[in-house]
Length: 480
View (cartoon, rainbow, N blue to C red):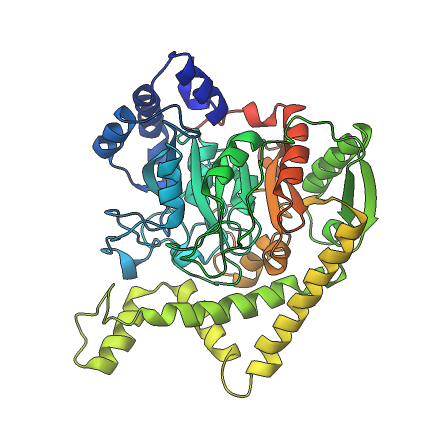
């Protein structure tokens, strides 16, 4: 039995039968990590001794009892470094837990390892980390996606059972697609953002990477729910997210937007996704042609709103209160300027400059205010679409994983990597990516399902049905 290929569900069953223990799972993961990490480099830090103590004390009767979960390095955990893969926070030791960490602990899970990411979650390839470059487990010459590339890579490499990430414009779903695992962004407000280092507050959401759709629902069930520490948290009760998993999808209405199958999409990606749509139709789902006409503005809207909010959120990093401080600073002004100049990487600086510009006097209405109006139109597009269908089906990414370094000198091309995922964040709806096959180079292709706000249960139902009818999720990458 290869423990590292087990799912959360299967591990829970084996714990109940006393076939294996959490400590044995941890040992198997550590052995897998030692063989894959020199190549993949998905983890920034691990503490095996601390994790072992947690594994030995785990209550396996709890919903996630005894399950080790890796954490993206922008989610605060008491006593752990939370660097956001930035030189600026290299020595920042968190004094508190994010709400999602407390909820994982309450569900019986224990955390193991902090994963690499694009600095402050700003990127689509995990090449903007200040510390190391994570590689795709399916082809180590290629990127794993971003910004949660470390989390996606370790789940894809089978060196983690599950991992948390954050999604601001596709930072969970896009790397999940490129690394061949399941990645899900919940509806805005469903999961507390308290303890997540903010990038763009109106877009950020915490979600998870898992090997199966059911596992993903189990993690979301544990971390979702109202939190008084987050004033954007929704008060509605969290339904049983696994209740519809395994149910027949006959009669489910699947919307296919024409805007997601046009210019710029890799023909192999389009073919795999269209094959998945045909499968849904053959299983009795009703396929509906829909339009999301404001999709063409998604990139522009996102990179105005997200950079504006990033400019505001990152103003707190001033070299005075915490984080990096320049040794060359002579006074308050030079402390501020030199600390930010030396502490932030090039992409973070680029986005701060863009955001400051669009919020500046004379440009606020021309850019930021107008982008917010178009964002409202994008949400209206989805509202109208969900009157005709239950779910929207699209590719997750327009291409498979690209070569490392291929887009570093062309920021616009890098930004276009998220063209199919951004709209869900802008509209506040839920979205999931799951494997739907491989191209001729054996690189994973991702299928994206999007549901209305708080439509996660139906989305999981449809995603699970497709997943279980295919064996894509069972394939293990060969890592040299």
